Every structure is written in structure tokens, then in C-alpha cells.
Amino acid sequence: MSIKSRIRSIPDYPKPGILFRDITTLLQDPQGLRDSIDGLLDAVEGMAIDKVASVEARGFILGGSIARELGVGFIPVRKQGKLPWSTIGEEYQLEYGTDRIEIHTDAVSAGENVLLVDDLIATGGTLLASIRVVERAGGKIAACAVVVDLPDLGGAQKLEQAGYKVISLCEFEGE
View 1: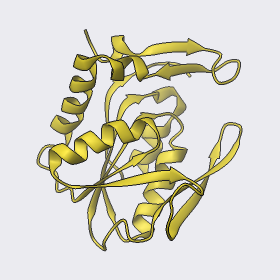
View 2: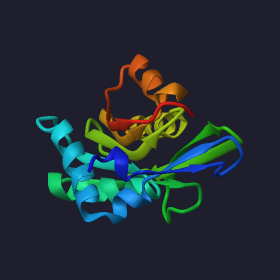
View 3: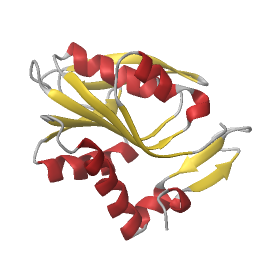
């Protein structure tokens, strides 16, 4: 079975008109989880990576495993107010408002190469905000790696036009 075939599509979630791509079905399948992590690892082979940063919550599952396999540290990118120490944050636009993500101020050392991992890229807002906080902390983005790209929403294209490498394991057309 392919990675794409293990992802559930849920209509009208979280609001009418949205077709939600749910990777929990992929994660609960041992081979699907293994294939996802191995696929992302294969795609970054040979890259200089000092740390892996991942966006909560599903990104943590993938990013933590990738960091372990690469033998590098892990940076949790959290929603505002979830980290217990001094933070750097960035607000970003959602389809239905704004949100804010944060990392600890000491999460990245100057010049470290950071692989940014999430489950999915849609409009790119969350990943762009994550890039900004990593760069403000002194890090450099080695690449952005996701399981699912929704190309019709333009997020991957937006990141690539800004000069960032985007890696995805599968795409779903439509919104």
C-alpha cells in the first residue's frame, strides 16, 4: 500500500467545505509509519542537519523519530503559552483567524542547520512562521519536509519561491 492510500479524507472538517487529510490512519499503521519516516529520511540523506524542528502535534511524531535516526536534537514548535521558558514567537494567518507559534530562545545555536518537519503543507502559514522563528534564533533552514502537500493551496510553491527546499511524500489535489 502507498502512503497516500493510508491517509483518510474527512469532508467538512473542521468546517463546511474543507476536505481534511487525516494522517492518523497512516500513523497507526506500522508499515505506513515506517514508510513515512524512511521516506523523509531518504529525501534528506546527505544534507547537513544539526537539529530537527517540528510543529505540534502530528509533526512531533515524525520529527522526533527523524531526529533520533539522524542522531540530532529536536526542537518543539509549540502554540503560544505551551513552552515553560523564554520564547521567540511569530503570529501567522489561518483561514479563520490568527495563531502564534513559539520555540525556546536557546533552541537553536547560531548557524545550525535545521530540518523543519510537519505532517502537511496547505497554505504554508505555519511553516513560514516556523521558519521565521528558527531564523530569528540564528538557525538556517536545511529543508522543509512534510508527508502531504496540498498543491492547490500554494504553500509549497510559496516556500520554494522564498528560496526554501520543500520535500513531500505525496500530494492531494483540491482543497
